Length: 154
Image 1: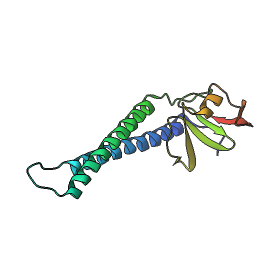
Image 2: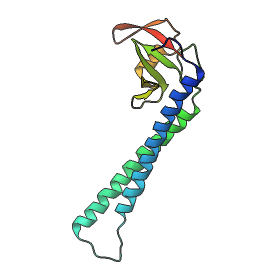
Image 3: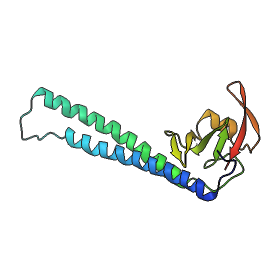
Image 4: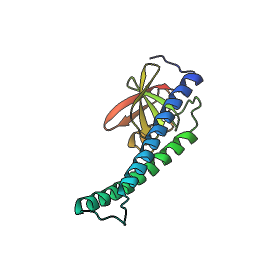
């Protein structure tokens, strides 16, 4: 890992994170559409109990998928609004190095790789974020009984 990051490199990290969040939101939207279609029962036809049960189950799943899809779209909207400019303080949009690994502050999500570096995500709702918010490069903090140092910040 390098000790500095250019604005263009940071933009690539943002773009990858947004692309992954967009794909997740689209996947949930597709699941809702498919499950909703499966939940539709033609009232003019007769159906056995299994078909009716399956349609009811699919309807329940469509509701769950719809709620999750809504949450994914909200996360995507939040992520798209975050300022990803270079920074010298831990805030949403910051890339933070802690104990040799990189974290991106914003919303929670799956780890991802850009330019050969793996990035974990930190939600602004996470206890870790509360411990590091506002810190600068070289600052130390205690989290879960252990001391850590901010060793990278962009």
